[in-house]
Length: 61
Image (cartoon, rainbow, N blue to C red; front, side):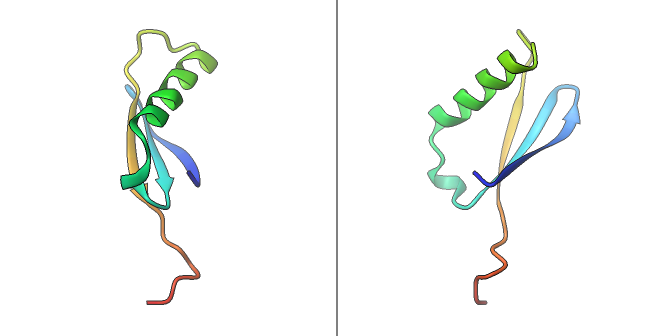
């Protein structure tokens, strides 16, 4: 996980920039959603997560 940014507020929608999205476990996504609900008092609010592969500025093309 590199960073997270919120792209929408209703419903709360976030993009997670990761190096390998296919390898991010579903359990970790659930953990993030549950932690956001707890930290921001968003009980019963649907939270959407989208995974995006970030660009590596040091990778050779």
